[in-house]
Length: 114
Length: 114
Image 1 (cartoon, rainbow over the protein chains, first blue to last red):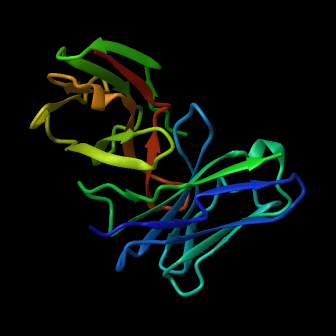
Image 2 (image 1 turned 180 degrees about the vertical axis):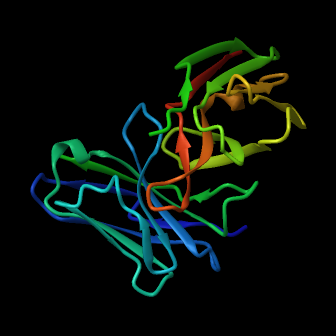
């Protein structure tokens, strides 16, 4: 079964350091999403890509967060500098289109900022 | 923005039925979804319902949709200990960038006692 791959699985970083997460969506899925899930809450959308273009980044804290999907396939989410409040699970998802299949999520990257 | 709300916690005995409730706000949602999240893992799509349906049954899962009240429920029959997880309700909405996105509730933690 096709999966959304994310790495690393866990990341511990000191505040003010830079950190990056990687996502490889299911082959052929044009739409890619990055969600942030704070412990005890539901996921919240950070950024949505259609191919290599950003569709929605209204909830992305652009002073410290950046996301790219240069060739319209895999994507990188970066935080610089990291803050204590950035500790969360970062989930990547992909989809063909909005449908009964929803999104397929990766296993996530759990970030701890110390 | 849209709000999806769920109760925080539900405890049932093994073999009983579980009912998890959700309210949403966007009446234009095309699909509504239920996702399951086990500890430390990503989100797994359990089932969905198209917005013009009232009910959908899928093995032990029954989804009920009341569009008038914007109320969605998930019933799990013969609940097993392996069903213990967090369950998220999600609706498809049009984001600020014009693309389809999912908005999630805060999740309901289901605990199944042997």
